[in-house]
Length: 266
Image 1 (cartoon, rainbow, N blue to C red):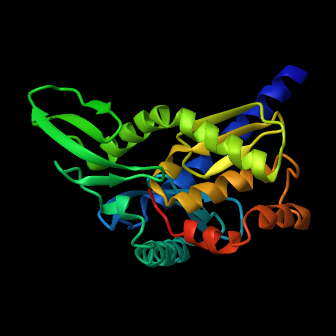
Image 2 (image 1 turned 30 degrees about the vertical axis):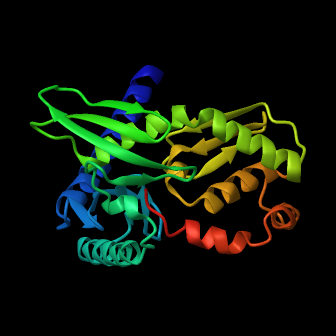
């Protein structure tokens, strides 16, 4: 008897969940929104999801624009809210600093690619090869690209970030070490360079400093600020007043750099 009741309860619970899921999918399918938006020649894929909360939000996650919409909204209000969020994000992205030049950077032969640590001259060669090959030396970056079809600039930039993260690993470790020696003198276990998309850096309880490879394409002063920010977390694992005082001691103009960093997309 108990087994039958349990099975019946489980079945009813499953049916309710499926009904909720079906309603959610129907609401999302009825939304009339573009699949992607293009700002500064950079494409952001629009993804939508429903959540049991009163507010609706929009957030950039790498190359995606995520709309988290309230499941309490009617279909009409859902459409209006999604359109308003999308328009707001387009306006914000459109006002981004021209310094975030990588959002419209095109890989052309003899052009110059600026990084936080040094510029590189690009040498682009097209061939019948099906794969991309990247060779980095002290002054230049040689790109061997397939001619048909040519790789997408965003895909190529991601590949280049990974290559440059390896190339600059020792230099970044030294920079972190020097900034730590001058301002903090804290114990660091390791410095990692990763393809972080939602944040510029992090500091773990195990004293591991992690930096986003995207930092290689911002100004040096902004790279320095992020490193100082994460080093300060070795002392304060929060954003308390004491933490910000420590950051300000090492970087008095941190607020200016912080605001400038918010205007970058890479």
